[in-house]
Image 1 (cartoon, rainbow, N blue to C red):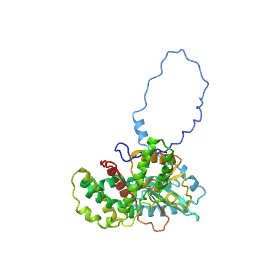
Image 2: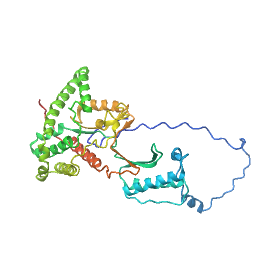
Image 3: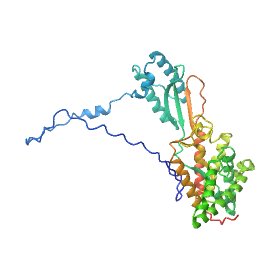
Length: 393
């Protein structure tokens, strides 16, 4: 796997390219049904002919039943009547939850179940935007039921929000109101959405910055000087922006800043649109965190089956960062790439719903869909902000 970040103003960044499994070796050549004969000297040509016109059309109109291979382990040795009863009870609960019709046909068991699963998957894929998978399982009491999994696909993107451009914007007179607006947006992400901040010792990026600080002493003078300067800038600006984000007045003044904001150009218009979306998200989900539906394997080190060396947890690709430009970021990006290359799984916001007769909460991934879009647009604006300010400590 590998990840890339902004390049030449392009965002979102290139997705992690998952390594594909190697194609299985061929099973050998198929044998012929007769001994090989030599070339014939007969000059007589084969009889010309063609199939009937309706042959192809009839083939295309043929309906094939879904396969049973993935269900064999569950269906084998089960009491037919009980399994069908459990399945259709669970299917009714699922259909009610998602608001989809149940279509059944007059096929015998086990094709009745296989076909119903096939049609439900098609309906869920068409209706539920973040639907991912549907499985028929059984519990310890041999009760069969359906499990539906919804997952928000992050596209394997690094959602790193740069704060150096925000600091620069705060020191440009004509952009100060715009900066205050985005400061409220970032405060919402910091306090309520719980996006990690790179100067916090518990954050994933903090460790990488510390590692680069130790490594800079071994660099050549030219590159080492640039890295040293950018490291000092990342630390100095990071602390000051963090202090501003920590101030809850940015949230208290959020709505007033949006109402009183005057759009002067296209950049202001895009910033205003981002702020409106953030304010609406804050109102609709005043307590929701970006990690609320994160699989425990990634975000919770004490979670079951946790393996931080094989899984890319959400806390690793969502964070505030100093900057997404410069020599320092290029080195940090290489470090992240090297670590992610060793991983085989990436955590994404996921909902697992069991239709076993117990109540199913009417939750969805609307919050995550809007939040990641918001972060995406905010990162784009900050990356493309143009203001070359000479930084001073």
